[in-house]
Length: 304
Image (tube, helix red, strand yellow):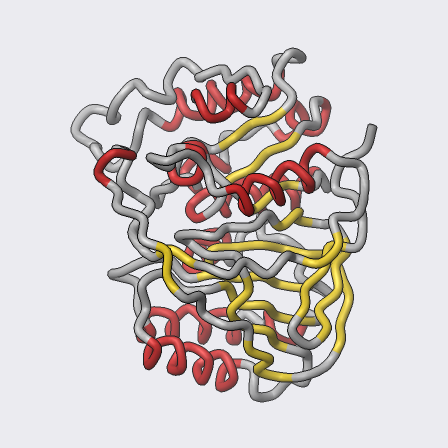
């Protein structure tokens, strides 16, 4: 909260955001009803200009069926998060047409022991605060690898290392509306009315930390293929991995190539959209371009 205030924002913690687990269900912060109530209240409050996810998890999809999409659409504002929040980002984008933002969350990014990473926050502010096309995702010359799910910032030990390089797995140029996602989390909505339209999209996916691994990614990529996702999208970008070995990264790249072998769209791997750090912001629904080793955001995501 202090990091947001230092950046000039006035953070408001919703009533159930820190209320503790839902009875014996210690894997969620509160009941579905309480989480939905907080969400609706944040959108309905005209003094609140943006809604920021606190942290990830695995159960945001529980909220989707209870959301009042008319309320949300009538009170458009910035909604940003990543990982498990993919379910809410995609459902709202699909049902309302609103731009949603795959990007930093309160605890993992703004809760860094030494303060938020400058490159991450500079890009986030450019995307959500400036009514201009952000342009190319900047190259970030470092990466950190550790689990960002621990809610205690002081327990994290972020060590910067040489970054995973950008690699063109298939050359070419493609443009289309961007869609950012955590690979396993986006599948929570598969086959439902909240699944976004992927036709002509530039899909940007990233993989979570251990125990997620290449065999798990193989299964999820196979599901995307069987859903017909790779027959619809215009291009694919893969984010940097979190604490994966070089050999596991190579396996991931080969799995992506295998899953998309019947297609010809361009594929870029190693971009700065990581489950750890750096996590640059992708505005869902805003037009972008993938060209060789670059991914750009070609339109403003916000307006005056």
